[in-house]
Length: 334
Image (cartoon, rainbow, N blue to C red; front, side, top):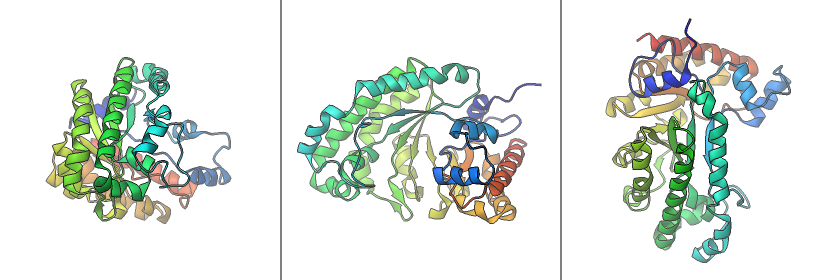
């Protein structure tokens, strides 16, 4: 009997080909530490780390090669500012875009290359995006003002970041060809985008244009991670030649069935409402039923739409895992 090959089935899925056996089963963001701490109190072996828990639940592994342009810098609090202006940016340049982080990314890739070649893992690369990165440096509020008060600084940051990301990608592609490349952005919230279409075109799209063609020239899909309701932004992203989006948060009103109707070739993953997981089997089954028609159509890999929250018991997660497999098999029977 042929061994299940998650990488092969992932590529069948994103190319809208028939998936054999079942859809890939991944936890793209794994779990909050509070969640796994609770599970260990409820019987999960104490010694297990994230990778061991994935194997314990027999989920497909989805390792991430991280590229950090600012690994040594930390905001004073979540959403707080590290710098205020261009002078501050100049002052921290010695801590930005380190060649050591590019080397580390290549080493991460090297560590999983053989497993990827055997089809055992689906490999993603995670880049800071052109909304995400300046927000980390400027802080949430200052960043939004900067579109109007400091546009030259935003362009400089994005240009520097694009150059760094491209160097990192070249080093990674010298080791392996990842299965996807994603931009961390988080530029939407429960009511839609955090920036205007005009600002997207001016401050983000030109810098995607520096990276995405290289990624796609290697036969790899380009994705954007943005929380909240991304629906309004989808045409913007498609215009920037982005292939896929995640995590499609249900609590923000995202409707993957409508998105699929409106955008038949868009790639998607996520979309499973984490808020139903504490409510027991009937609620979790109903959520899979909601997603099943889209799962059957291809181009969509279901996953919890963010980390499983701490109010989900080990027992309920076990039920979710059982239903996950059941519906991934049903989807492959299309």
